[in-house]
Image (cartoon, rainbow, N blue to C red; front, top):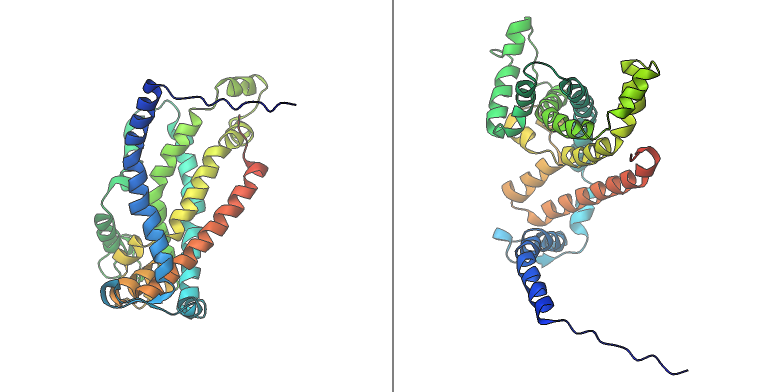
Length: 301
């Protein structure tokens, strides 16, 4: 059999011009990804195998020594536990409260837009201002909480409850963002389902668990995944609310906090890079498990 001749299709001048302009428009994004994302990741992994000098200069390759020091450090494991405890508070409570608010504010009520704005305000507030306000609320001597309820609680100085106090701030800060995402998901659910349920005599609670929850599962999965990743990277709340002299700092400091401490305060960039790479592996493992479980409980209408 004669071999079929390969026909080379030449691009026309217009097609070449279109492809060229496409590359020109995509180039800034690609350059930004390479410079701001890919290169820092590669360089951080490289630094994790080195003993870095001043200002990141004079790197000396030391193999897995940094990783060995990190994985045998009690400080790393305690900070990882602190981070997980924060995530256990922030993620479920932030999602649950955000969902309830979204369902309530999805109805036709007076001042609905104003309520949505009020609950979303913490997302646009400056983190420094948020920390200042909450430090005042938590102050043991002059704080509003203790004076309002006649208490004498060391909200951020007692190592037994400081991590809960930080978690409460996290929930307060993120609940508005979750609410907005749930609102967008609720508006995508066809109203016909609720009309059919009304005809069948289903109560509002039954409709919530049988219609709203299943059809919101894609939105819930997205929020769950992004908030777990965000909670595991918590830094600003710990850094701005907890003073370096606070006796409860060791029970609250997160993995990213000790990364900052060793990298920018102590100047040990190699050790700090090893910390953040270990955290990256943990986040990737959790993300992989979440992706594997998606088909079991996420329903797409």
